[in-house]
Image (cartoon, rainbow, N blue to C red; front, side):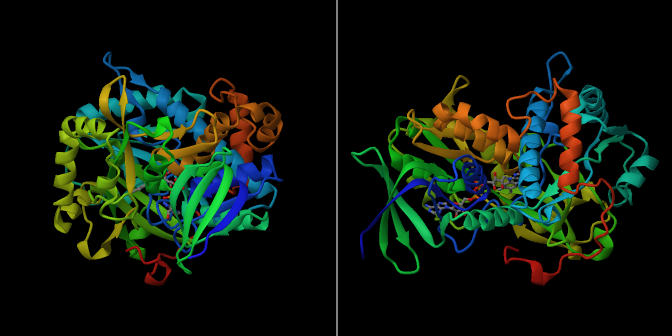
Amino acid sequence: MSNLQKKTDVILIGAGVMSATLGSLLKELVPEWDIKVFEKLGSPGEESSNEWNNAGTGHAALCELNYTNEKADGSIDIDKAVKVNEQFQLSRQFWSFLVNKKMIRNPKDFIMPIPHMSLVQGERNVEFLKKRFEALSNNPLFQGMEYTENPEKLKEWVPLIMEGRTSNEPIAATKIDSGTDVNFGALTRLLFDHLKSKNVEVNYKHIVKDIKRNRDGLWELKIQNLDSGKTEYHTAKFVFIGGGGGSLPLLQKTGIPESKHIGGFPVSGLFMVCKNPEVVAQHHAKVYGKAKVGAPPMSVPHLDTRFIDNKKALLFGPFAGFTPKFLKTGSNFDLISSVKPNNILTMLAAGVKELSLTKYLIQQVLLSNEKRMEELRDFIPNAKTEDWEMVVAGQRVQVIKDTEAGRGTLQFGTEVVSSTDGSVAALLGASPGASTAVHVMLEVLEKCFPGQMKGWEPKIKEMIPSYGVSLVKNPELFKELHTSTAKSLELIEEEPVLVHTLDEKTNNGNL
Ligand SMILES: Cc1cc2nc3c(=O)[nH]c(=O)nc-3n(C[C@H](O)[C@H](O)[C@H](O)COP(=O)(O)OP(=O)(O)OC[C@H]3O[C@@H](n4cnc5c(N)ncnc54)[C@H](O)[C@@H]3O)c2cc1C
């Protein structure tokens, strides 16, 4: 054991898409700052950001029905959809900036155009979808959305879903061609290659064990080098805890008042994947349905075309599950160790309140493969068991905290928790997730560097022109940026010439 003591300006914990994004922003804003990254695994983007661990939807609220709730008067509230869409535009702009400056190459390696669709069945749901379409299609951010109840049209849009469909229930769908499939794993790896070229020190197989504040105000991290077994101590003026599901325990170690009374609830997931070229060739969209009663919002079923390593596959899910681990590579003691005297009441209150979620998760865990196939057949009536296999998805840790809605309220969004002096920040939660990484990391900068933001603003606006501007109120700017980013990211909205399907060799072992 050796005690190495090293000083730096910034430490980023975790090599997922969030640290990658924050590091890339900071390197443009203050190139002279020294940045170090510590990641417990052997390479970047191996946890939630990995392409097989999430659904790869560029969430812009083009198809996710849970972003548009029906109000008591029957009208549709589109505020959340507008917000999520605007946030995704920030990501598009930053990625375009990086591509235009050749800091990352070949956008097709991480983002592909794919129509986003919502599909519902039953009179009540059809009525909802129609109202939602009317509310969104008048909005500049959702231009180009189409709606149909016509089965013939639907056969053109989603032949695989319509084939063998015998139900007489009304059915309807919306479709918008400007959706995207994002390979967040590839994006993370590209960003880390870029960071390394900018002299960011990235340390893999280094696990952060403890964080405490020194008398001089610096944060001291106790880190174990997993290869050598040695313990190192590194200090930094600013620490970002981008540990994904592992962020909550690290935040708790800081002891900052903002880390108290917060708990985490892990929800795991499973996807079904199809690589049969004949089946894959019959579907070209991300199709989101409606969540089952009692299901949490992240369990909305969807059938997605995915592009991974320039090959196409179909993915269906997610099926929710439960394990006490906070990371896929975590420990069975994660949940219990996160219960502290300061959050035990919050956690217990959530346990009592969320009985329907618990019941839902138990039902999901107990689903047999044939039952999962039945759910898939709601989407693809002729689905054959032999064409589909299970993939274990990433872990999400939902935030539990005391809010105006009461003690122990389960949150489904993403939360930045930071100290009042801005010297440490953590990202908790997982939704809308990687799609809005740029927005969330800008929030980290605003919270932690309020004094510098004014000086940084011109550079931020060069990278992300709509920063601080409402696109919905500036439709001309939206149009201009949407067109220019589509060009930079090569999002030509037509069927790409990709005919291969995934084979076993390209799978990274998560199946
Ligand atoms: C099933 C599922 C589906 C999803 N679908 C989508 C989607 O369609 N679209 C979308 O935009 N988002 C989606 N998301 C969310 C998205 O994947 C996450 O928001 C995003 O990847 C989180 O990135 P991150 O960098 O915070 O975490 P991660 O990618 O999990 O990275 C955290 C890293 O920190 C490391 N780490 C943790 N603890 C330590 C420690 N103590 N020391 C050192 N290293 C540590 C981990 O090993 C890991 O590499 C989905 C998530 C899940 C689980």
